[in-house]
Image 1: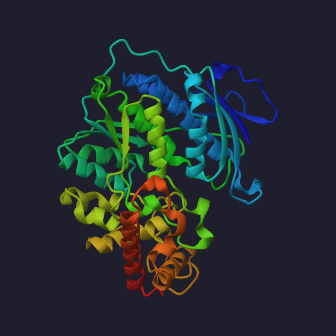
Image 2: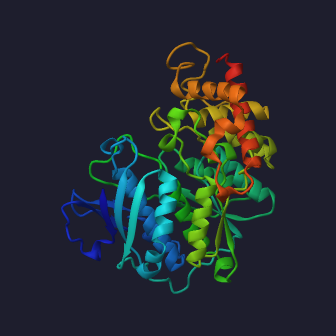
Image 3: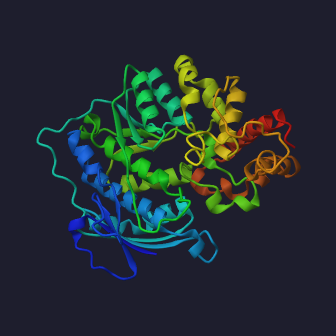
Length: 425
C-alpha cells in the first residue's frame, strides 16, 4: 500500500495507486485520509514551542497511525503482514532520509509489517509564539487512563518529581484522564491530544499495532517545550507499563507476531532512543517498570490511598469500547489486571462482563485467551520457562536477559494463580 502524507498545501499529485493523507488538516475529498487536524491549534493555543524535529517526528507518527488504520491485513498473502510504501512531509527531509534504515527497522519491529518510508519537503512546523510558555515541570509522563500509567504518575509525584502529564484523548477515558491528573500532586499540568486519523475504507476491526508511536510522539513534543529542555538539559519521558505486557511473550505458537504486540518492548524503546539521539532531541524514553509485574506495581505503589480510591476506575481491557466501556474480563490485558489485584491482595471492584472464568463453556474457560494462558503454563511446567519464551527476549539488544526472563516467569505465575482460583485447568 502506498501513502503520501503531507499538509494540504503540499499539492498532492493525485496518484491513482496512492492514498493521499492530509496532515494537520481535514481531508478535502472523500478519497483522502487525514490526521492531526486539531493538534497544531492545541499546541499553539497552549503557547508552547516544541522543537522542529519533534514536529517532524510527530508527522511521521501521524502518517504511521493512518497507514495502520488503512492497511488491510486480509489483503496480505499471509493474512497479517502488510507492506507500506510511504512519503512523509517534514521540515528537514535531508536529515530524516539519512535515518530511513533505522525508521524502517523500528517500524518493522513494532508492527511486524514491511515499511519503506521516505521523506519529502513541505512539512513546516507552526510559527513560534512571540513569548512561548516554558513549563517548569522536570519530566514528562504519559497518562493513558490505564492502571500502569496511573501508578507511574503516583510514584513520580510521591518521589518529589513534577511530571507534565500527556494523554491521547480516548472516548471513554478522557474524563478519567482529567480526574487522575487533578488528584495527583495538587493537580498536574495536563495536555490531551487526539490524532483523529481518518481514512476511506478503514480496516475493521482497526489495527492497534502502531499505537505507541503516536503516544510517544506526543510525549516527545511536550518534552521539548519544557524550560529544562530549552536550558539544554535532558528531559525524561516516562512511559509506564508492567514488564510482562511490555515483553508480551506469545503465549502459544499460534500467537506469534501481530498477536503479541510490541508497543513498549525494550527493543522498540532502544530503537526510538537511537533515532532521538541522532535527531539531537535530548529526550530520554524510560519505562521504570520494565522488570516488574503488574501485581508488583500495585503492591509497591507509593501512594496507597489514591491507588485504592481510583485503581478500579482505570482501564485495561483490549475490548473496552466493544463491550460498551466495560472490561470484558477475559482478554489478556484483563487477565493480567485481575491477576495483579489478586497478587497484591487488593479488592478489585471492576465490573467485568465475563467474571466467572471457571465456567466450562466457550465464552469463559474455553475462550481463546484463557486457554492460551493455561497452555502456556502447561508448556512452562513441561519444558521450562526459557524454552517457552523462545525468541521473545533473545536478542543482543537487550543485554543480560535473565532479569527479564525472571520477571516474565513471575507474571505468568500471577496469571496461573488467577486461573487456579477459578478452577481453570
